[in-house]
Amino acid sequence: MPERIQLIPAYIFLTKGVGVHKERLSSFELALRDAGIAHFNLVPVSSIFPPGCRIIPRQRGAPMLAPGQIVHCVLAKNETSEPHRLIAAAIGLAIPSAPSRYGYIAEHHSSGQTDEEAGDYAEDLAAQMLATTLGIPFDPNTGYNARKEQYRIGGQIVRTTASTQSAVGAKNGYWTTVIAAAVFL
Image (cartoon, rainbow, N blue to C red; front, side, top):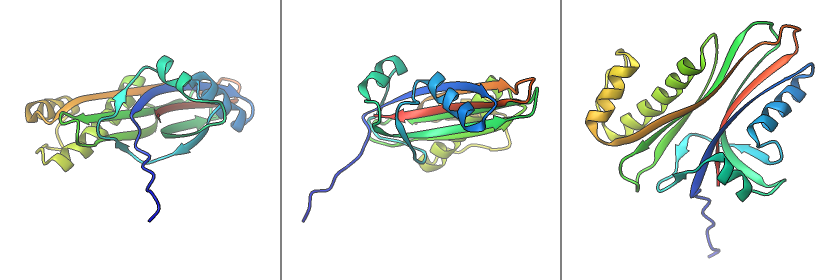
């Protein structure tokens, strides 16, 4: 029987960026450059934070990768060519207290939300997904801060965080792209 290859990341870093250009694709490329991940072949994956994975700073993680490398990431992206339109892309993480358990990563793309609003929403999405798998009771109709307190009291979610990039659409109608990414290593 052939040996199984397990691609379980040991590290993750968060990054974000914004790009503005008259061409849509070039705007996306500039957002990737701003985030420091344009020189990788990005493969979007779903939303599981691997057991035992550690969050490291982008400045430490990016040099561990080689240009052209196939890199898995959870990617949030939003774009507009509408002048003055507020857009955001956010990544939220929820990590369980038991390192042997998996957590969740949520991507969120929105219009009209500030960095803080979009980040809180993405963080809450990830925490809700983790809470349901851990059996932590919560009321989805309560406000985010009240739910955060419920998660804390439950003691099974050790950390939540978010990374968000927002921008206002360029006045001249050029494409404005925002991205936020959780990059696996």
